[in-house]
Image (tube, rainbow, N blue to C red):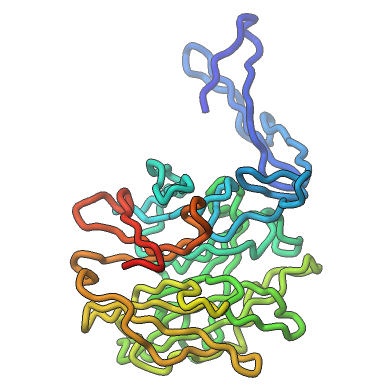
Length: 353
């Protein structure tokens, strides 16, 4: 950000919003008319901004006085109460499409400069502190990213839609010792607490679901559930999921299912999965069910047919609370070929088409 000097030629005024707790660092560089700049080494022009930890994050119409203050809503990266999208550009940048609460998104803003090509990205919960994996989460929604090199990282969100690269932590695959990392992963979603695991250390944890190939050549694909660990502010929050106790909820046939969406579609208070079968160009509903404390999927039923070919509807997602009017409902969002990536996203209510 360039700021002109004031009338006295010695000062400048700038307004900043520090998001890092317990402090943020502001770097200041001064230029003269000959384009010479002040020193950059030894932290000469670094200013530490003390930051007070926010006790709450709340959306439109909510405030501390009415008792509705809470952490960022599921899917909300910017703290305004509306679900947002991120997408990768062809040149490797990461773009944020902020939702406005009407089912529409704002013009894209860049939140990552390079290196995001081929990444699988999910966001749906506050898994870690903004500044340290050993501190309690701060209420900001975070990013779960499988990069093109096969490594999986948790990026803390800064509350304004930016994945905090400096605070990222790598999550190792449970089969790493046998030669398998996250390279075989074809899809990642973070549905929240889908399994309702109430055992010690997992109550109210945010879960992860993946589609993973059984071989390097992807002879077949399986659906895996990684139960979330409790986000309780204990000394070490560095492990958001129980990676060593994953559960297979789809045994075979998931190789081509690169599009998944989650939501309670049948009204039984258990989240379901909607997936597209490219072999038939149809959407199928896999009802979630919890039996004796264990989450599983029931037999699939046809959920949509006709206009779901990958050539015309390549991407499918299911943000939470994209529309506030007329009640809270989940929606399907789609990317249409011929438009810039995620610039136009037609919407379909869960009870509709």
